[in-house]
Length: 286
Image (cartoon, rainbow, N blue to C red; front, top):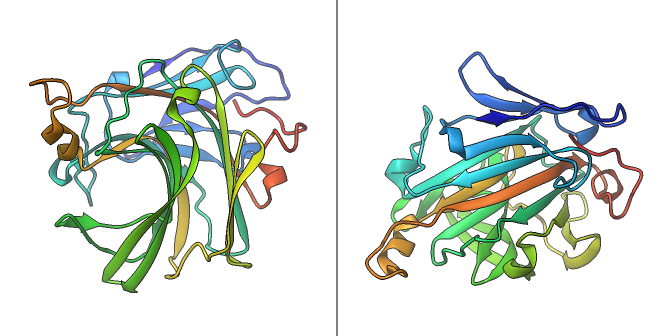
């Protein structure tokens, strides 16, 4: 972990990194972001995460977050082991969680490193809304606890993937519905602003890129009612064997290193509370 400290303007309170009583790394933010903290409940290596001060690089304010995932970066917690389940990740889970009711909106700014490589057919998730107490099943003979939304990089594009879930709560049928957002090439060395609202009340989902609406999905976000939902962000690679079996670079079956930058991570109950393109009066998140 690398932390660079610098004074910023009073109107943008500075976040701080911490380690909780269980040894989990986290980032504490001011409440105007809609969050109290973001925590990694698995382990991590020193290279995986940095919270950096550079107002010339940050999307807004002075600080941004850098995630790096290398081949073999798999970790575990008490209930799950990525190493045993064909996965690698460095992700922060946001708190507090939300009830699946009314309107829940999310936003973040993201930049891909100029050397970022799309590793399709392995999935690369760059933001997701997950659920507690949701349905479970299997995917490719491995245990599966599907999220509601995944923002994923594949086939040269970024997609908003809604998980349409059916069947039973203990043997769920998970069909991912992809909605195109933007070319990955457009995201390299350039900030892209992503925002979306899950409207549980009116059963719809709306998605914006750089303040411009891209999709209106007139479907309920959920068909099973979980206890709560929460946002996760970073780099998450699932079914890594799919890429390795392709051996896209000759005899080298190692996954390439991926580096992704994040800023302006927010949540609220309307698009005006989270998207600074739509509401420029929003205070920067540092």
